[in-house]
Length: 411
View 1 (spheres, rainbow, N blue to C red):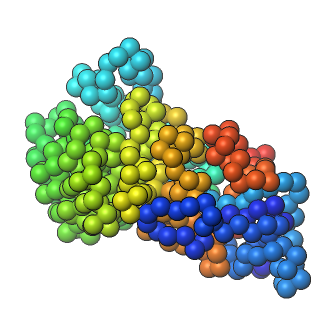
View 2 (view 1 turned 90 degrees about the vertical axis):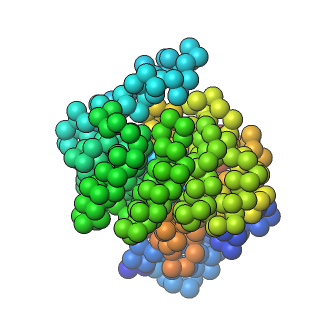
């Protein structure tokens, strides 16, 4: 059944924009007083509201008051399946103890691993669902979620089972990623033995049960080294997994590995230099920058402006996790990144809509165009520039997933 939704003061379609490189705001397609024809969860047409009303003569889902419509947001990098808190770590960080020092003392990721292992399936599912619901109510209609706080066969499988179980009933779409190669668990003596265990025991079972089609690894001085990581990723590719990489957060090396193996994306990149960026561009690897981690760790932002100017595809994700990025507010983070890195409105929005969707292999969303999913969000304003101007404080008041309307009030 068809319906017409509108009128909206402005519709920001994100259509006809480049997949890579810089975008000026003059390139944005803005439809004034527009409407959207939705049929069976997909967009049939986007145009002037009155024109569509005369053409289709279908039921109207009327929008009253000022409203700007955009595609639903896509968060391509989160760690929101976990148990417990790391408030103690945060208290240490603001006293001057570094992320790496906390990890070396057995805190950080290891602290969350212990709590996640102790958590039963239902408790972990309930805590994760609440975070998914909060993210959806902020306009995130598609989100990636990583494992990586289990670091054992039963606990990594438990995490991926939780993510997939929530995906069966939740409103937003969830994409799972296996990050068993987060750090080496305490019970293993060396990285190589643990990576072999992941390859021989964990990944085949994940593949057999279709729990995830993506594999990630944390390449860092106190996690996994570039050479051993490249060997592991090649083997994961041979098993049929898509590859993404935690790269260049504190030290370089990961981006070059991502480029060498032809990863879908390299995520973080706070320490990347010109050589690393060129390698990503030359090998068609999307750069996913994570401003939430920079805010959480008081670090410089990834060189997003330089990455775009080099011709890369740039996505922006929240990195929502219990340690380095506990805030999880994608819009706020994106607005601040835009200001500090001088990204245009168009570049920022592209990074959390269609460019982010491409990281997850989901080109059916992120653009308001015929044939795309009717994943849409509306902001209570008559000027799209207010969305970033308010630095995350202006939130969507209406959210559509597959053409079905949800509001914060109804949630």
